[in-house]
Image 1 (cartoon, rainbow, N blue to C red):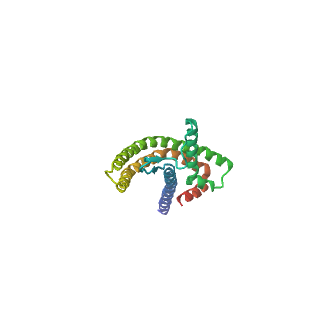
Image 2 (cartoon, helix red, strand yellow):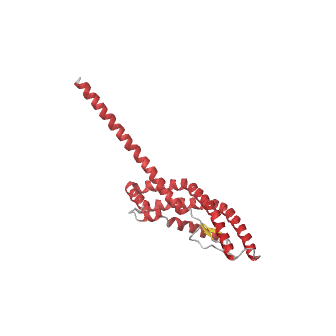
Image 3 (cartoon, helix red, strand yellow):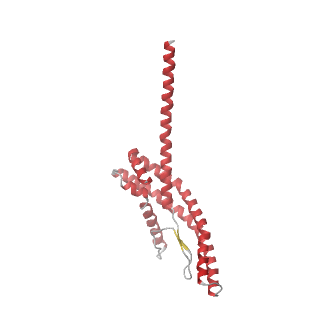
Length: 218
């Protein structure tokens, strides 16, 4: 009876230890996936930005996707190269890049990460190509309404204060729609970025990842 009781006790302890180890084994992958998702969310928000240019009597409504760029009147090749540099600059100015630069990485790790960042640049270029197409339609609608107001102003059907109030109404009307479009492309870019961040996590190792994650969250 005593041996039977000892056997049951040993078996129970073994089962408890098994489930304890299983829980811990499951917890780490779940935590890792969650942390990667959080880093990706921060990065996607930083990379997909839209700046709306206000319209007035002499200036049309417009938008800028590349905050670092000033526009380029050269040929298509120069414009393409400049846009590529703008995308590269935006990635390099991200919190992920900044936090990675604070880590004590080997030359090999740094080179692998640099190669990984080319994926983020490609992600952003693709996202902005489709984002630009959608925003053009919104801006054209805004501009049509601005021209209607401008015509009324020139005909003195409205005064300047009414004209300015009308421009504010146009901007507020379309601001939500523009943000919805931006958010959609933030989500669209995440799978591509997630693959890159997952690779970076493997490259730098657990200890560096903990430091990187803390840096980005702070």
